[in-house]
Length: 426
Image (cartoon, rainbow, N blue to C red):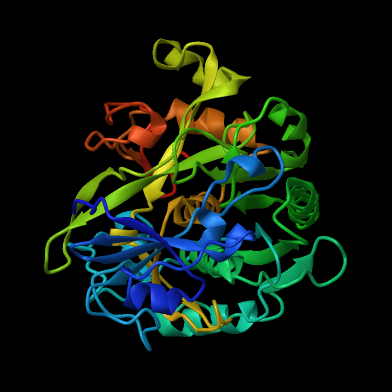
């Protein structure tokens, strides 16, 4: 649905924001406190303060890529998931991890993915104290394997418990990330690596920790749903995204232009689509999510696996490589009980390319091939460009944030080569 042009900045209480998007809060110097709301015919889309890109953060700190959706007439803190929004079962159906079912309807479908092994690490900032309990509740709700001390743990990259983000924004990101990873690779062990803050210094230290932990566990994936505007020496930090038998993923963002670390040549860049359903909830297909980020890097040269795309990209790295559902209007259910702005979210619909990175990392984990590094993974992905049995080419929709205009066949700067389908070719 077409978004209203009405955009307002409002105060910290996300529930007050959703209930009355017309009220504007007071701008504060510590600008992470405030969020933005966009009113649509379907409901209110909330961009948390942590997901707002700020010029002063360039090269210094990252933002999340989360969009919260409150359907018209619904409460944000729902007691249980209800409505035509994506669940672990519907995502597994749409992306080919379970037997094909006509419609892949989230209102009726209950069969979740099986599979997944080794380890997926999630890198985020600040502490999320209810992570294990929330992931357990999410798993129980959707019939996923139970969470235990052996298949989920939290690691503090600095060696001590990070502070809790006072706005609660990053904790929403963490809930989304671990729940999407478990939803699509339920057999994988998950490690949530918490950085001391959202500064690049702390996040890159956490990245190094995550890569080392996954490598030591026998290999797997590391997902990053955060990012920021490109900067001149971003390639200096590629070393943090390298570890033996580990593949790194990052969201391309929800704002204009390409984002670091998705632009790095040794990271799988994941953009966003919209899932199209009938009013009854039956799956019809996918189109580009109009707010997905991406585009041609201003810094990183064309990597070898994209040499076949010189006519599109010229001499620079293009993002995304692949994509997955990210539109908050077609968002996913998550569960989060850590207070946000003094309120508890409980069941909430979330979108943004923060959905896509952990979900694609989980899909690749579920494939079970475990490439020796990210470059090998990307070579395999691009080798299978155009293979309709392994990737769904997204050819409809526009993506002005990625500066490419519209989706097109085989590759574009909206959705890359398309969305993963099944476990082959990944």
